[in-house]
Image 1 (cartoon, rainbow, N blue to C red):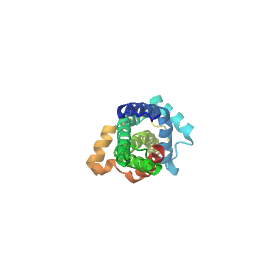
Image 2: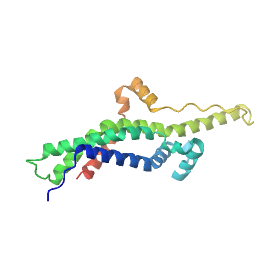
Image 3: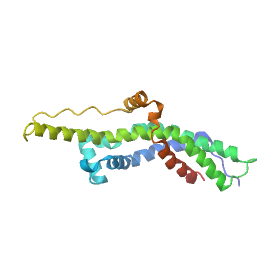
Amino acid sequence: MADKQISLPAKLINGGIAGLIGVTCVFPIDLAKTRLQNQQNGQRMYASMSDCLIKTIRSEGYFGMYRGAAVNLTLVTPEKAIKLAANDFFRHQLSKDGQKLTLPKEMLAGCGAGTCQVIVTTPMEMLKIQLQDAGRIAAQRKILAAQAQLSAQGGAQPSVEAPAPPRPTATQLTRDLLRNHGIAGLYKGLGATLLRDVPFSIVYFP
């Protein structure tokens, strides 16, 4: 019996739903990873992943664990659309008279799909990481400001707490990156994203 072909719209719906569920489930772990990786040895705020998540909830609330998730939730469906459509396109180009593709050709089609998807994943990762790390940076500035105020007052407790600076939004970050660095600012780290997504797609699609 011939393999049943699944239409591209059905693949997009399935991929989009899977992507939304995946982001929702693993995003707090991804946020902890980003903050742990970005902290400096001299200014370590978190001892472990669980310590990072507990401190994040205490300082930013439960939804603080999902800071930056809106970018992923918004762009995960276009990412899946590009990846699945590109894979179907390359599989069609590599097939001969509708015959089943060999494993090397399936891997080559996956390579093409992974290369195309970085159009979305690179700026998505750039914005997500900066939004994820904004909470750590804000807390660090707050601690440094309190220490400076204590030093200025000779060790006395500060009477007035300085207001926390507003955290950036994805729109603000995008505008700043485009203004200061052009379109290349959104694609910083393109090489690393290719090294992650292309091998994954080569293995995933076959």
